[in-house]
Length: 135
Image 1 (spheres, helix red, strand yellow):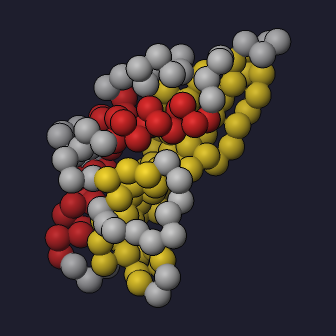
Image 2 (tube, one colour):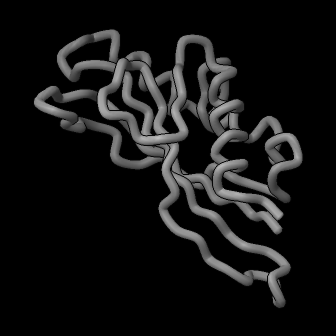
């Protein structure tokens, strides 16, 4: 049986393969971009009868830098592209079992490409939705 902690660790490991992108499985007090933060959005239990399969929905927020920095947008563009060495989608989906931590997963979409305020600093960020199926 998979745990949320195990799945987060697997997602962090997958994203960690992207050069220069740090990952954290816990929401930090302060950030140092570029960083991806892995959070659970929801859990749908019993998708396949009698505890056969649960559906975990994760949101991965990639924060790249201050909004005014030109390099921030180019960097974020490389993360949201569906292919290539900096693609978050590709990095996560290379091993759809996260090293055996789940049965299957899929990055379903990217949303909220834009500004995010943390503390008193406005950063450029995007969120990725990941659906994970695990027993």
